[in-house]
Length: 267
Ligand code: PGA
Image (cartoon, rainbow, N blue to C red; front, side, top):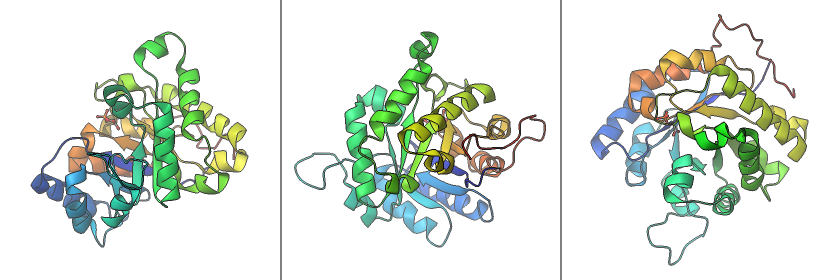
């Protein structure tokens, strides 16, 4: 049985106001006491400090949706690791598919961000995922493992304890189409196998791999039953406190109907 603690993130994306963000954070903090997974919320930049204040005293971690890898200087509109730490951020996303595909971030930029976050003692969630076109061309594994290798280039084994991976097939994000538990488990198993090659079996067994893409209370338990699925990165449903909280509870409770055993492949 895996000893990895599942981690569930709520990626609010470009949603909420100061008022609705605080209300959402308050509801998540109040409702997540006692859940057996780590919980992170990722508010928009302008609300980080305020939401951080709301979360103070709770176990919910404050996450940022992005960062810039340079420490300071003439980078209009960008936000450094030090600024994030200054407002209480402990974890940051890198390479979210919307950054890659809407904003145009390259694997190289994502890698710089991952290394900057780790150098600044943040935890980083590196997002990976193939587009529908890539999946239909049979390139899912190549694409995802390519993003993994690029994203982790130059990351030392000692830093891997602060890396979380998120497998988020692009075709499942915000579309209402979810990967099947088998699709998710297959990709997660391939990612874990690649970690064993890149590092060693211990790192592979210890690294958390979240699934993301239209996760809802109705599908979370079946997805969580995959032995290599260690929680979720949730977009739309993270804006609805009851849904998000239900998902945090399901992340640690494999579906009793699932016929798979929760064993880590590389344990
Ligand atoms: P979704 O977003 O849950 O709305 O599909 C997931 C994500 O982008 O992290």
